[in-house]
Amino acid sequence: MVDAFADAHLHNAGAQSALFYGREQMPHPNSTSHPYLEEEKYASGRLSYNRIIYPEAMLRLDLNRDELVILSPDFRNIVLTPEKVDYVELHGKHIIYFQRNNLPGSPATGYYCLLHSGKNKVLKKQTALWMENSRSAREFHYVHSTRIFLYNDSAYHRIRNKRGVLRVLHPHKSELKQYISENRIKFRRDPEKFVTLTVKEYEKLSGQ
Image (cartoon, rainbow, N blue to C red; front, top):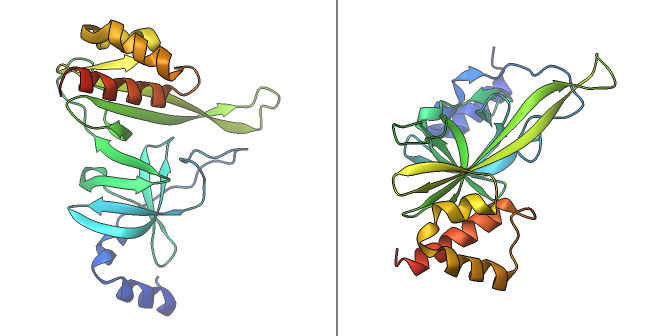
């Protein structure tokens, strides 16, 4: 039951109150780490939800369950309906809810960081898997991983290395090799920067 203090907060929330009556997030099992994007604590983000913009929503993205969670004024952890999430800007990242389509190589439905949007798109998928610690069967932790996808010429391609980027952007392969060398960008050092900058240069070369 919502007490008088929380009820007053909900009243003051006004139009935002529609955000706070969804499903509550189930607690995670005990572990030595957390499954959230950047940090476990809530952070202020800019949320576009059902075409309404909320400039300062308290949010966190659960990478294990693929859930965007908002903190309600009465301190409940509410899972937002993903199909209503237009985008969210959180921890300096632009996040969208991508729905799998019929194009070749389409990634699975879920939350993705949109690294570049144009004729070509670059998407980053982050996940956190719950794993048993090798030293103790009673302790668990989350292992974080990242996958990058490049949309080009009506198909999606998972990018694993420099060669994969150049194979997709083959019409300007030689020019891109020169650009990469001159700017000293390394895939292993920063994959998302490498892919994003290379795609931008490709678009310049192809007049997109």
